[in-house]
Amino acid sequence: MEIEKLKQILFNVNHLCSHISCSRTQIKKIDFGEHKQIYTDIERLLTIYVCSLLDELVVFEKFVHKQDNFYLSDTLYVIVPLIDYLKQFDSLKVKRNKLLAHLNRDQGKTFNPWWKALDGKRFSTTIQEDRMLFSTIKCIHDIFKKRFAKELKEVLEEFNRRLISMKKKLWRCLVSIPIKISLQRLKKFKIE
Image (cartoon, rainbow, N blue to C red):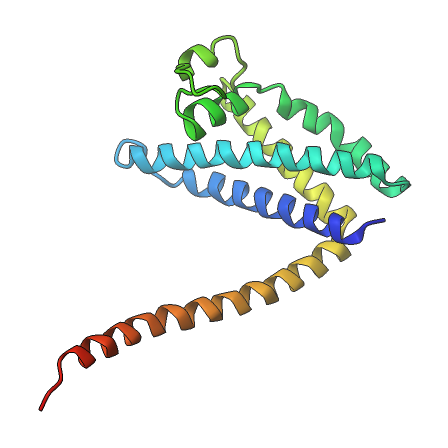
């Protein structure tokens, strides 16, 4: 089994599910009447994250089919009905592509308004459907965390080390840039 490829998939699925869950929890705290734009932007980001999760689950499915591993196949067997449920909401990808990513343009850059592209697509129209959609994502996340706890722990530790190292480099750059600029400015003003 290609363990590195699996770890990459696990990292992405975990990252996306975690952000979906956090955003979903936090959006409930926003007063829509007072903060419409923030609420709308978080809703849009949730759509992008859900679509990215669906894309990553396709990567997982292709990965499983290339492997000769019962444990992976069994995991896929368990999550396929959940993926199928999410795919029923075909408005998500259209909304991401037409409304959020390419604003009313199709692949040929022709004007194609989002309201026409979404005509006939399925949305979550009730609070129960919305809850079910996000509960399904939570189930997928829980399955991945349970089935691949060891690999997920390893990849998170490895990536966190890399992120900490990168943050330190970025911090040094951010701190040194103003100092360099200040020194350059001082050199221009020769005090005699």
